[in-house]
Image (cartoon, rainbow, N blue to C red; front, side, top):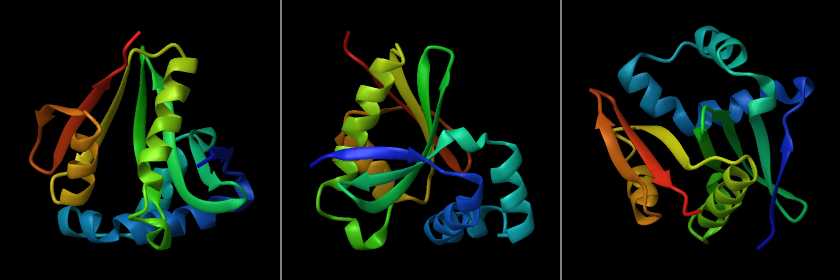
Length: 148
């Protein structure tokens, strides 16, 4: 499987927002209550557009990731594999891509936060070797150490 990424353009922001809303609505709504305007503003201003990347397998758009280098680690803000592509190993291949990207960026670890209610994502990250660094009321902070 050949995973690649392409930076989300300004003209594609609404598509990216729709993908985020579809994937995270239930979790965000349960914790904060979902507000479209607030979420769009947050995703547009708290994150840089260059952090958002479409995930492709060959020429098929299969998901969305948002990540950046933060100090000596790659911080994964979100990873979405579109529903129709879930359950066939694409998430694992996407994480392999991000591990290689982190190494290319000279990072020594990957960090992320996940909603405590997102049991499927937490089990997925644990299966890859991520460990829990800390727990908050609604989030679990995890990391994966890269071997040198």
